[in-house]
Image 1 (cartoon, rainbow, N blue to C red):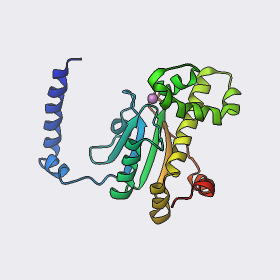
Image 2 (cartoon, helix red, strand yellow):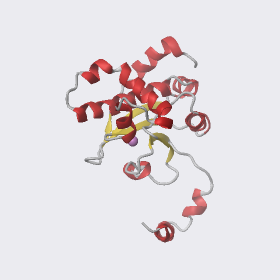
Image 3 (cartoon, rainbow, N blue to C red):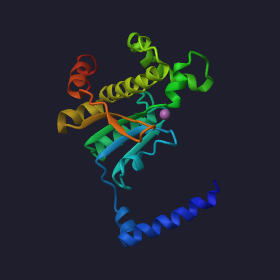
Length: 208
Ligand code: CO
């Protein structure tokens, strides 16, 4: 890919937006009011806005390897703080994807250098659900199930934050766990029982 194409694409994109609305960019520059915070994987195949068919201004996005919500990750915690408390998003989505390289790497019990502390969080998910995962014989099925369980655990990590707990109590913010199936392009809602999870989490992590 020639990088010059990127700038040509940009010119084409500007023209297409202005054709539909001559004030498109001046409207966009007035501010943002997205309803959704999306936390997804950095994987180049999982383009947040494109797979949801959303436009600039509609979704606040945070991406990292394997869509993790790590309690001591100031980057992710700042994104949550800003999106929940200031932008007042109505929905927070954790979106994983099948065939995630980060999850695959975590399934290998070996030293992966600087990645170890990050993958450790996913390996902890494996350990927490070891009985269920080890009962799955097919490696791909096990891998896909770990992707789903990881999404669920990252939703739980979201629910452990004071910002999300307060927004849930005060204005009923919604948390969603989704998986993007790269094979079909489908977005799958895991239909997590967030009310039940919130209730259980509050027994120990009540910060709201
Ligand atoms: Co991934």
